[in-house]
Length: 201
Image (cartoon, rainbow, N blue to C red; front, side, top):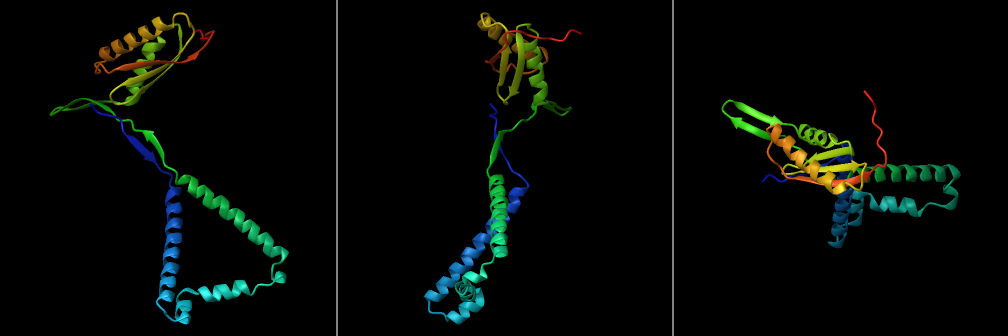
């Protein structure tokens, strides 16, 4: 039978994070290549013209304490904080967020056309069957391709076994009554309400 698949959700900002990652990787590869050139006795002057590593080193090494002013510290601190927040947020968006896919249930596919049922329609039918009982406070169904899971919140703990069996049977009847396949139905207790408040209509 058809098994439900996982889909990896991705944020549009993940592309920006990958661009930053690629640029950083290219910089590492570039300066790694410069080290290889130095190891093969290429002129340091030539390597410095290609990468500017010596010029950057001389500039940093030549800094004096009086060159680090209060404004410089403030700008460096704010730039570091901004970089931490921006790059941290982009890294967070890179984390994959898998979720279950939901596809339509195909009932008919012939030369005359196709009949498909949306997952939410199947779930609503099962939820409606469960809520027909007065001792069911809430019902949430989830169609998983080859089975349906129903989470219940009930108001009568002593009658719990009878409630679960009745909801299971009624859900199966509802599926058959709507012309849907007799899928396995898993009923799970997820909540208990001592009193039930229902609006009168």
